[in-house]
Image 1 (cartoon, one colour):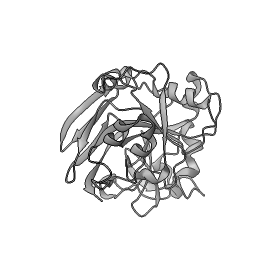
Image 2 (cartoon, rainbow, N blue to C red; image 1 turned 135 degrees about the vertical axis):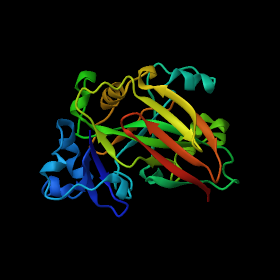
Image 3 (cartoon, one colour; image 1 turned 90 degrees about the vertical axis):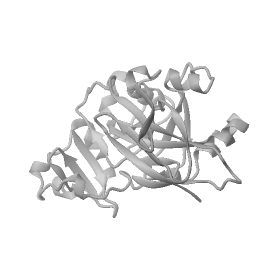
Length: 273
């Protein structure tokens, strides 16, 4: 597995099982993670070929893996169990929505809850995110790997009490600053990697509160890429969060996490604005 990441100071990194090196030491001329997203679907250089010595990720402090993400898609009710929890029927087509780039933050967060005068019930949910690597349109499901740069764990938040007042308030309920926590890296697997047995877990204060496998999604990550590419042009840095196995209410002082088998984990503290 290879990884694309950024330090907390914004320096771009390339990683693998041997550790992380400055991205430019492995890909001459590359200054940002965005610069190499189009290369990722076909694989990236090994850190062994870099002009720097790999350093363990345990010694690094990571920031959000993209400084300026593109379009941020969320997918609602993509697991049948989650739809049942909310007493809703699973949609016949992907139930997608947008989040603004200003909602994104990096590992550790913090997740900043709105003042209680605005919302008193915010939920957090772990998700597997797909990062687009190449500009594309009308991509077949079987060709999705040709445009996917990689995958990442993310934590998505919802002000549920706002959403429950009116489903048309979805954008507002999803869009507060810090309501999307990016994992520490983009995991870049081999093309064709089987995703079906990957488990996604929502973790609250070290307790797993929801879990499910990608095989139980109504629409797989590759299907979601193909579907949205029929609607609009997808571009490097666009991110599709593929839905959650389950959400849980969060309060100030909580620690929230998303765990995604093989692709990593991310956590963040919760505070009140």
